[in-house]
Length: 140
Length: 224
Image 1 (cartoon, rainbow over the protein chains, first blue to last red):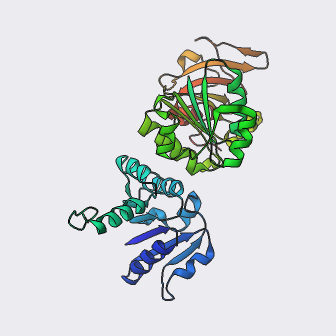
Image 2 (spheres, rainbow over the protein chains, first blue to last red):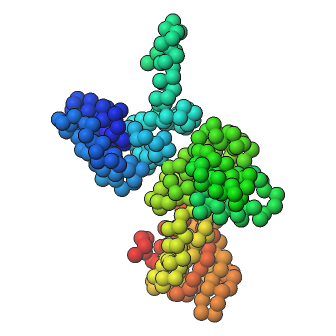
Image 3 (cartoon, rainbow over the protein chains, first blue to last red):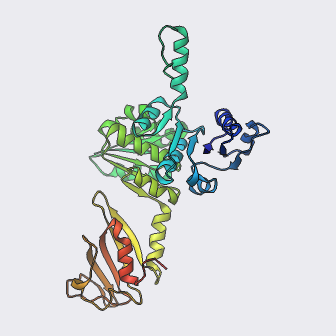
């Protein structure tokens, strides 16, 4: 699979490392070049400094041939703009977006995007730990 | 009308000033930066609130559900886009207008249902292009919801439209030639009007008819 990842924070770096180790072609983007230090030394994917909201940059990293786009930058709005471009302009078949704000996450899910909210997942897990009998947040 | 403006920069401030002069409208200006919001409040008063205009909960607080119009004018295109989408899809705001800072985002904004986009680059380019003798089709404005736009056309050497009666031209459906400008000045044409090389024409055309109009006034399918 060819995967483009926006954002090389802890989550981005970890997904990138795992995909690359499994033999997938990974291109990872971050606005901060030092963010790539989080990647393991044997990471074989492509690192590009720049913004995932930039049309030209996405083209440069091969978004047109990508099978998947994962938006994991720190800003919800940036993730949403870049993802909708990947999906609707570049036709990437699988697009996954992290949206911290649970309400925004829910809305864009309704609009046909695949979002997840770490805020909601975290809250559900914390709550679920207190009441283990109620399987809240354990659907997956 | 209830109007929400997202972004209290120089553009948002200017809009606030203008709207203040128009009686009968209720206006809210949302500015994310609290100190900037306080500064604006000193000048514009109660209409300014501090908060995040792309956040669902905050838009609800300022009554987005009864807003007739939401305008986003921040310097951040992603915030502008998301605020318009939240307004439209969560709160059913009838009309959304977004400032587009990066011209390459314009197509995406339109595709995602933002009703109008405004960009400085677009406005300046239209001004420049209409003054160039070699310009062909320059979009002047779009007519919201109609699928039509107003364009400025300039008849080039070899134009199939030149030397023929207007009524004999095979114009795209719904096209209206509104004004013809030649060396004698502007005139409203009728079916007996003949267009000449060098004429300037203002026309209302369907949004997807730009290419066929270009061919008619240049003789070439692509702009050169």
